[in-house]
Amino acid sequence: MALPLAGGLLPSAQADSKPNYVITTDATYPPFDFQDKNNQYVGIDQDILKEIAKREGFTYTLKAMSFNAATQSVSSSQADGVIAGMSITDERKAVFDFSDPYYRSGIAWAVRQGSNIKSLDDLRGKTVALKTGTSGADYALSIKDKYGFKVTYFNDSETLYRDVINGNSDATFGDLPVLQYSIKNGTKLKVMNPKDPFNAGEYGFAVKKGANAKLLAAFNRGLASIKKDGTYNKIVNKYLDASASTFTGDQSNNDTTWGILKANKQAFIDGLMQTIALTVIGIFLASIWGIILGVMGISQSKLIRGISTTIIYIFRGLPMLVLAFFIYIGLPSFIGAKIPAFIAGIITLVLNEGAYTGAFVRGGFEAVDRGQMEAARSLGMPYNMSMRKVIMPQGIRIMVPSFVNQFIITLKDTSILSAIGILELTQTGTLIVARNSQGFRVWAIIAVIYLIVITLLTWLSNWVDKRINS
Image (cartoon, rainbow, N blue to C red; front, side, top):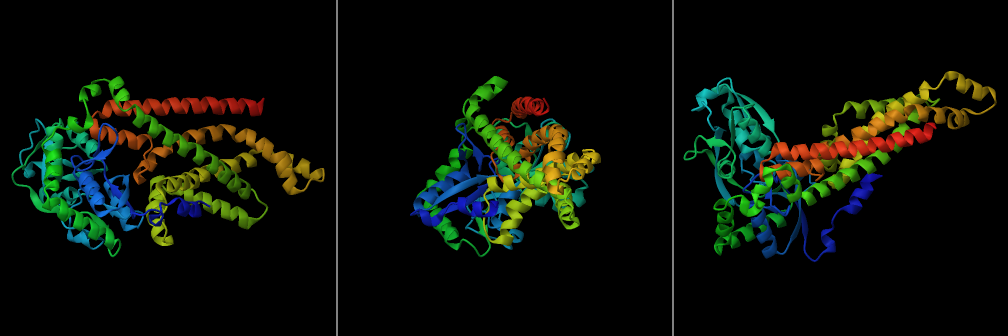
């Protein structure tokens, strides 16, 4: 049901006079990609893309997600292009077509301030934090065995930096300008090779190999144009020469939890509304699907019972993150059509939560005393009528607490969908932390919001429970 709807919700390039493209990015990568104080996506990449789009006469819809998800969205044709400080490598050229290079960089490594680590040899036996899918991670892995260190992975830069600062990891590898920008704006790290970066390389805008040639050509023309008239240099200098507060606003607000809440009020509200929308729609559809699976599970037909058992087994066994990536990134390649992130998120919730719901619905019906069915049949009632009139009403009363618990689980599981770029409450927190580096306070606010919503949902569910069983 959702797949035709997905097709209908997709933006149509033909509907506008200008072509519209879906562009992905990693919005936790300052100074190239991040959010400003108005929750707008800014940075070197974003300003370059905006200026090129204006000159070349196309529009675009920007989707922020983790770097890995951003690149996979393009390779699976869910998006048309990616701009995220992406280094041009031979391995990536096998999957993507790159634009002309728009920035030259290199790999640096950094440790927390005050660390005793002085050289790469000192990393032996230590743990190095890496950002998934980046050139910094690739370089670190290439020398891991030589220097004998272990690695751990993160999807966003701020959490990675915090892991090193807190001493959980001992060092990190990343693009030199990104590390320098973060340190300049308060991140307590120290770059160990600022004048001699490893694997100097270039950034490029990328599209799926063999696809979107017009978009790639437009980017190259626009890039040449902004370099020729000096706009490019103005964009780069605008971010490299300024402090973060120029874009993120007065950081004194971040000294208190109330200040953070006040400064980011609208972002929190928008994230909460998205979370509630996912939860309400997901709960409603998953409950219907779960009840269908539960009824199938007690059918007189072995085939129908077997289908129910198989579906429940598959979707309870799959990790929700794997399912989300399969639906959003894997499935479009198979069916040849894009699936919007929100629709993919709803499908993920329905399949996953519906399987759990189906299991306890089936258990609830089976928990009704067998004598109830025997008594109904002895009165001449057919099997289906006995189920509708006798077994199901009693079973539903038994399973109400399980429904309450599943509602709460569904609400919390929406946070996993941030991985495919849905800007719900958790993803909102990630973007705010990338901007203000106040992880403890921001995540404390997010936690309290979740607890408040869960408490209200529990009260509502308990009220419904009392009404049903009164």
